[in-house]
Length: 323
Ligand SMILES: [Zn+2]
Image (cartoon, rainbow, N blue to C red; front, side, top):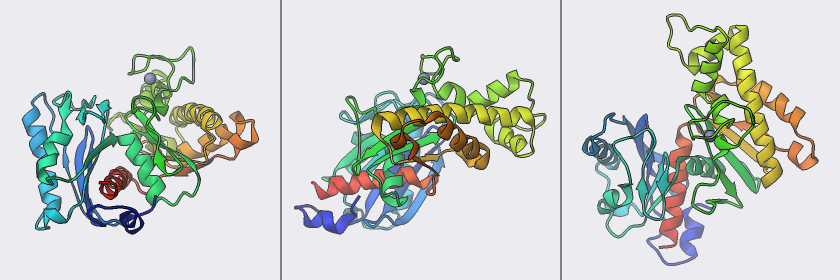
């Protein structure tokens, strides 16, 4: 994606200037001021308040935004880009994140619009923003990139020819719900045998516990499972091998369909590093047959948690340039 100056030269608009980027997740609400060249000038985050009441969550979001804007002249900010956990309706500007029960059909765009009157406000899924952020700032020159977040769930987004591929309803890229085991376990989505039902952190932990693994006094999560995997505990390594195989099946299938150049994987489970990526690369090599599928490159996210904010910023910069 080309940063500000070229875009500003291509048409009327407020000219290149920083944008406000917002990242809405079930664990935290993050915001940043991002320069047209992708530099994060300032960023902040607050835990997402739990509970069913709308007001505290909305107040926390506005608080973190006020905090990052600080003493800066808000008029200098040219647009707002929002990436959010889904489901969401980008056209209506509303979100209903599964893990934020306080917000159902919450009009996040209308809520933030008064902060920068007259400026564009754009909304996209968090997986789309992660993929776009990686494409923009991660240094992948290919034409087709899949971003994946392997964490409590498995999410993703597609960037094709430099643009997010939204799909028919704005939901393309749900790689976590590609079916990889037709006799597999039920998935939180209501389906069965999805990648997420096998390779998400909780799914791996559930399987390991079913095989007799115990975290002992430690938290029973994917981080502890990874700790044991690195220590060579057989059930823990088997859980990661199994998750990696499911991810590989999804990556190979998606590559056959879309002719992907790059797959960039981030999220808490991906932080396990080689414990996940070594069996993943082996399984991709085993499952892929066609030459164009075998050429897919698999990367660990280099941007980490910043990818979503940077993707939201990229959307905002584009909206500002076309205003
Ligand atoms: Zn599913």
